[in-house]
Structures are given as C-alpha cells and as structure tokens.
View 1 (tube, rainbow, N blue to C red):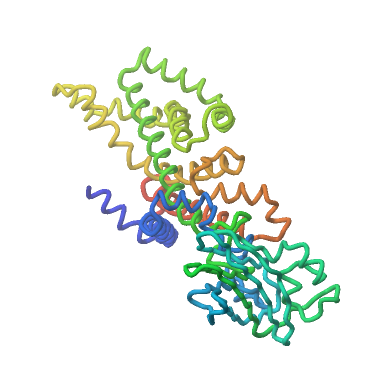
View 2: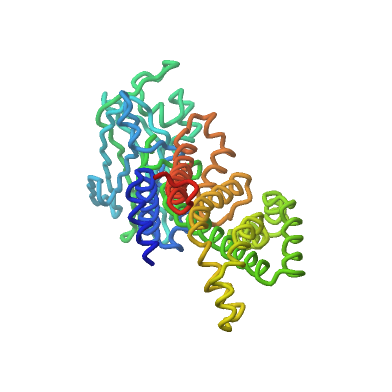
Amino acid sequence: MNRWRAALQELKKYPTAVAGLLLIAFLLGLSAYAVIAIPYRQALELWRGGEHWQAHPRNAAPAWTNLFRRRKLPPTVRLDSVDNGLAEQDELAGLRRQRITLPFTFNYFDFPSEINLFLETEFTRKTPLLSIRWQTPDGRQIDLGAYRPLRRQRLSLSQDRELAARLGHPGHIGLMTGSAESEHPTVLRGDYQVVLEILHFEPGSQLRADFIVYGRVHGLAGTDHQRRDLLVALLWGTPIALLFGLAAALGTTLTTLVIATAGVWYGGRIDAAIQRITEVNMILPLLPVLVMVGTLYSRSLWLMLAVVVAFGLFSAGVKMYRAMLLPVRRAPFVEAAQAYGAGSRRIIFRYMIPRVLPVLVPAFVTLIPTFVFLEASLAVLGLGDPLLPTWGKILNDAQQQSALYNQHYYWVLTPAAMLMLTGLGFALLGFAMDRIFNPRLRSD
C-alpha cells in the first residue's frame, strides 16, 4: 500500500501524467453525465431517429461554428400555432372561420435548408378547409394553396413541385428571395408571416400547426442525414468506448497473467502446452477473425468483447510475463512459503503475481485505448453494434454519406477528436507510470 501511495505522489511530478489524468477525468465525467442525463433506453430510442428529430435540420453544422463566420448561418425557427400564433375567429352562417398568423424574423445571409408545416387536425366527420398564404418583408403575398388536411399531415414547402415551378426555385429559396428571376438569388431579410385561414364545419373541430424553418446550424455537435443529433452518439459513445476498452484490457491482462504464472509455477508439460498454444494463437490475426464473426454470426458489441478476451487469453503477453516470473519462481521468499506449507494457489496469487503487478499496470493503462480503437475500427468497417450510438458508428455513417466530399467536416472531426483525446489521455498516463514503476527507465 505504501508503494502505491508513493507512486501516486510521484505521478504529481510529471506534467504529462497530470494532463493524462485530467483527460481521463473529463472522459469519466462525460460518461457519468451521459448515463444520468440520457438513460440507456432513451438513448437507443433517440438514436433510432424517426419523429424524435422531425424538428431538426438535416446535415446541420454545430451552432458554435457561427462564432468563426462573418456571414452567420441561420438556426432553426419553430413556431407553434398555440404558443406563437396570433389567432382570430368568427362565426359565419353556422361555420367557424379561424385565422392564425405566424410571424417570424429572418436576418441571415443564407437560405434555410427546408420549410415544413406539420398539421394535427381534430374532427368527427367533416375535414376543415385550410388555405395558406405567405407574406414577405416587401409586402408580397404568395398563395400556397388550399388543403383538406388529414388528422396528421406534413406539408413540405421545399418539395412542392408546383410551388417551385411558380417561384422558379425550390420553396425554401423562392419564398425567401427578393428576386425570383435571378439565377443567383439572395436572401430577403426581414419580417415574414405565414397566415393560415381555416374553415371549420363542426363545432368541436380543431387544427394545430407546427411551422418549422430549418436552419443550417444546430446544437453543440450538429446533425446527420437522418436529422439525429450527433451529441447523443458523442456522449454515449464515451461510456461505451471506455467500458469496452477497460473490460477488454482487464480481461486479457489478468487472465494472461494468471495463465503465465500457472505455467511458470507448475512447469513441465503444463508450461510447454501453454507456450505451444500461445505460439499458435500469436499467428492468428484478431481483426480478420472479428470481421468474420461480425459478418457470419452477430455484430453484438458484447460478443465482440468475448471474442477479444478469448483470443487474449494466450496472447504474446504470456511469454513476456513468463520471462518476468521465472526469477520470482526461484526467489527465496517463494521457497520459504513453500517450506511453510503454502499451497500452489496461495503462492501464485499471494506471492508471485503481486511481485510483477506494479510493472504491468503501465502496460494495462496503455492497452485500454488499443481496444477503444479496435471497437471504433469495427464500426467504421460496418461491423459495429447496429443498436448502440458509438463514435465508430458516426464515422461509418459519415463515410457512407460522403461527409468530407460534401464538406460536412464536423461529422468526421468530432468523433475523431474524441478518439484522439482518449488515446492521448491513457498514453500520457501510461508512459509516466512506466517511468515510475520500471526501474530501468527511472532517471535520478
């Protein structure tokens, strides 16, 4: 115990170790926040997409990138007819006429990415009649048509071909430009209005509108092609990566150490069998085996973890640990313990393993990011767990959607930065611990 306390005090003398500890503490804090703020089931449900992200733009850059732009990109504007609408209504010959005005201000130099209108209608037999009108800052009024809305319906003004033909541009551009005839339209900035005129044929008929002008920036991490907030995968990718790396490193290191120690202690045929199995296992490539398992059987993260640990039982570490343990096997304290009647199990776990454990701690720390990168590599190859939101899954989606070609750099850089921080944190700590625990590297 005193040795470990002295080692901890020694770590404080190394700035690299302190930096590594701070990075690891940041990753652990991020993991705790992800688990608490977004429970596991909620994270899986969010990552599946669907209606959860209908108010998010596609392929939107992080909002903080506007800090480095002279011409700011527009964020998303969302207006609800209940909370943001100006409503008027009157009775006309037994019918109820309702007028809802949704005003918003747009002062950006780039067009929005989409414009959608979501409708929820309540009626018994007769569907209300809806007419939509668009008013621009320069006073122009554009008729967007009349509809008999369903109970739940989405009207995409950006994909309306008839509207695009009238305006000369897709809806989200033609509705917000000052000169529709120009080949290179510019944004008309100012105050806009969307006017909904509803004619209800029943006393209890209701219509609720959710009007969304989708921006080009969103949140801290941006969005992908399915409107999913990448922050969910960045946050939850942290505990998944650390858990996989820690479990794989712990499982392979401890089991390999125990196997090597048992071979050294018992010797003879047992040691020879362990060495031959290790030599055969060293020839087998781990990554192709994992690719084969993921392709032919299952891509479950926990199955991949089991395969990694199974192949790590007789890894090259067995020979390294054997070389370290051979002098310990012949040490006087081991012979004394054997003379006092200590059993083989007690000698292995009480006397032999603890003697080499401090030297193995740095190797264990630096091994963690190796397995983190292995999990990310499998996901990039399309063999990651299809359910879990991970850093590698983000990179795989970015590769499939040609993110770099389409200049969605954030989609690649943010998960890559998290992988680099993880590797850097454990590497800095592991190298500093190696200098402390390994007498050959210690400088006086």
